Image 1 (cartoon, one colour):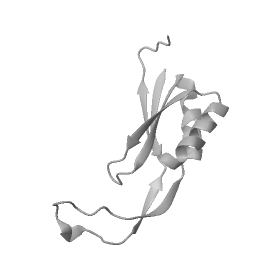
Image 2 (cartoon, one colour):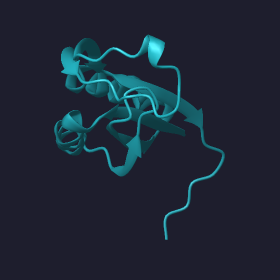
Image 3 (cartoon, rainbow, N blue to C red):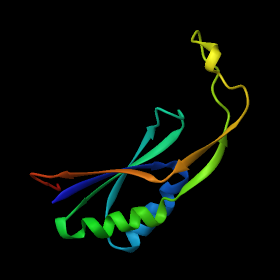
Length: 109
């Protein structure tokens, strides 16, 4: 058995959860915050059999696309203002960071 942990952008969360349910996968959604953009993320945990991992990874890949977005950088508080960019910049967001972990035991009560 494997535990798949996918960190995705909030805007992809509902779409991914719906696709997982359609294919018969149960999951748990957790709210999280990214360290780079300081924006909201969604962390999805999915437990599945070893032979279904590739199917889940395919669903995640198809539902969580990379895209470009304008963001306004946060002003440095007491830090070095030399590297601060005072105007919006375009960055790549979306996609998914996925971890596949072995599960020694699984219990459902």
